[in-house]
Length: 408
Image (cartoon, rainbow, N blue to C red; front, top):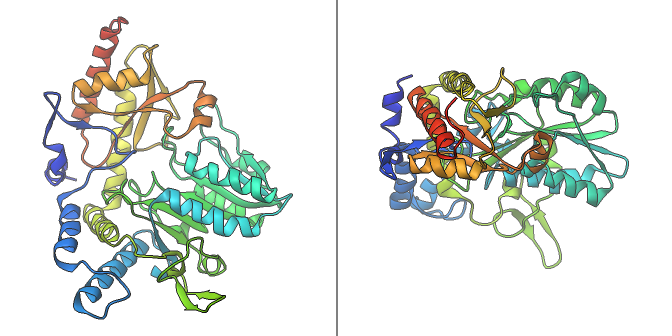
């Protein structure tokens, strides 16, 4: 994996911020875009733009081919059985809300259980809170171990024959831990529940096989995997998707419309009412081409190597607390520095051209479990280097000096 060659393909990286070369360590929030993705979106607008599934003219046909071609690429990328089981959405949040609003509300009743974990992003927590309130179901949590991980033994205890849904993030956006999704899916299925996966942080970094994982729903976002913002996808088992009702109504999702009733198209189109996110899908398809050319095994190895290197280097900084497990984690390191507020840490680092995330990371229950109000987070992707992690460490030591804690 030639990191220098990869970096050359990302125009945004070749600039200075506050007089320093940009060190972008915030890819867990949103990754940068290679030139091939930018070109694909521009070419679509310059040459092929038209609405899809409607016009019989050439532009309409080309746009439709590009849009449906992107659906095929997503299906292949996560090894879905067919493109028809891929629903384009605005991102992971929309995909999870679709499952919660359409599927979960129709199957959950009082006495049923929905099982998640305290590490979930708000987009995989609040929808289930709302389903529980609307249906009378009980929301339950697999407890966290001291390092923030979950155990199969605890999952076996919490998931019961009353459980209808288990929904867990594949990779935590705060702790970086890789959760045992395949094992959780087996437990869920033994108890008659469906397995939902938040794949926002896993899909950019590792090879995903929804058939091998044996999950029922899998949500992903394009903007975290080199694609444009505003595009994502939901994979679902065909039988489950076919029994789900749409939650948005309008053009293109219908089969027949009468004055007092309507019928819906087959999946996935019943869930894609109105003009879809065509340019976003085209860009997502180009992002998948880009990642597959590198190879997801190489992407995975690079992310884990950077994460391990960062854990080693940052652990040598006195007064710096790192959250999450030491092993089996990828893509990010979340930390706090002495009594310096994470926002202050991020502000000082920005003056040195280093971009990190600071805040609660849309995980307020997890912050309370960690007994902090916020954390700083450095996250890595295919264009990051160990030299950049060294720069981060140097800047953190300088931040300690700036706030009067000295260098230890």
